[in-house]
Length: 324
Image (cartoon, rainbow, N blue to C red):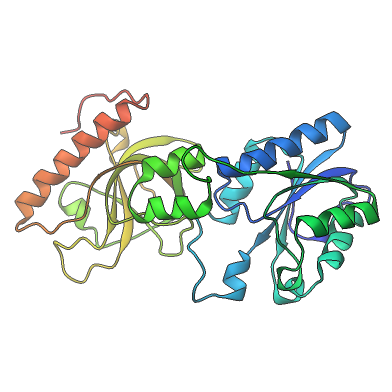
């Protein structure tokens, strides 16, 4: 998949294409009605399939103090779209200047002049252009003016409309199972491993601590079963802690993953500091609680590791002997 970071990156002979536009935060199952239609239309017409999206999210530009937390970062969004088999993704830098374009100006300058759209596929609630003036009726009028077809697709879910809002609600409640069901895959965070207080190592449970600027929405405080994935794709089973660890004073909220069942030969050489990793959340094991003593905390951490191992075994993980 080609990734264009601006209109200038698009080759002058690109297209024709079938295009859609949206934030696609999470690239979840609610988006698939539109995304599947794009691919099918592009294949039947023998043209390119293109997703147009934005970075940063428009809400961050228009209402930074009230913008929702993003389910995923831009790079994870691009990778998710790549995995769906599109020909190209255009990631446009969202600015107030871009937001000030009229609905027609945007469509002509992006869809018509650059991507040479022969068909535009959108959800029924699509909005774009200055003051969100463009809607599905506008798109159909512009299609008639500039010679491209418009296909309107309804998004739906089993219980309620699959949406980024529903995923955020689930993650804020620690319900990563529901989030996974709507996403179609486990929720993940991506970031650099940084040094922490080394308290986990002192207790016998060393952790990889994600930097505060890591991308992906942080789920509710608690302990989770999940995976830590290195840049080369190596997956490690993990017990993941989210929160400020109330057993100790002055600990900031953080996400840290303890890799379990590492091969004995890898224990000494297992240094992730400075590396970029992905943490995937499979199931919440418990909430975050304060313990009255270190011994009680260590006992619970051992229980957490055992529980995480059991949960991940249902996902195909085959644990070896527990490390001593």
